[in-house]
Image (cartoon, rainbow, N blue to C red; front, side, top):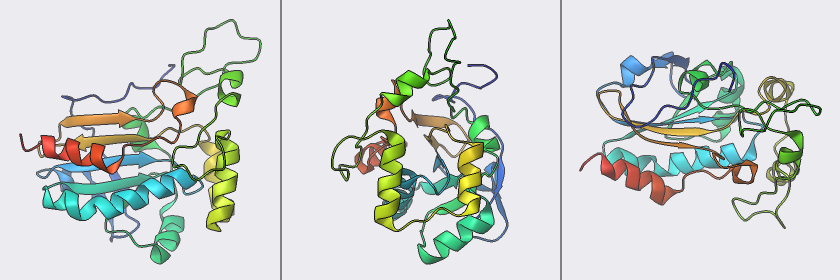
Length: 226
């Protein structure tokens, strides 16, 4: 696990953060959100087609979540200038924040993978210390859009081509800097306490790109009222 913080769990305080917004002026902080429950989801950069799809789902859920008293926040590992260009053409009612260096991802304990050397005698401990063989064996088709279950990297290439999404130099740089960043969803109550959390692929790489569905998210939001 190295110097990584474990993911925040229910009952723990959300850490302070302040991030630039891609669809509002200025920055948004924990302090500015405090007082109202909010769902905050931490994603990879725009290069990840599955993350783009989940951001879209959060946008579509925003009216129902707001009706339940919950704001919707998506944090993307992309520089704000790049994100503003992308979302100008694909607007979302969700609040979109940018975490270029993954500092807020780290503060919430959203894991990123590190690969053991090929000659290592250490036992893999996904996702913190994974073997390359373990990752290479992964096959995914979480949205059912692929012709068959594919390796995550192959799935990304296929869906980006299908979407007509061309990676810019900025996207390539983000991927090079944070190639193994995972995704995390957290529901925070009005006092800043985590009430629900879901981390991508906790049980292994075959769970990559499987995110909470609408029913899961709405059920978690509904639990705040009980």
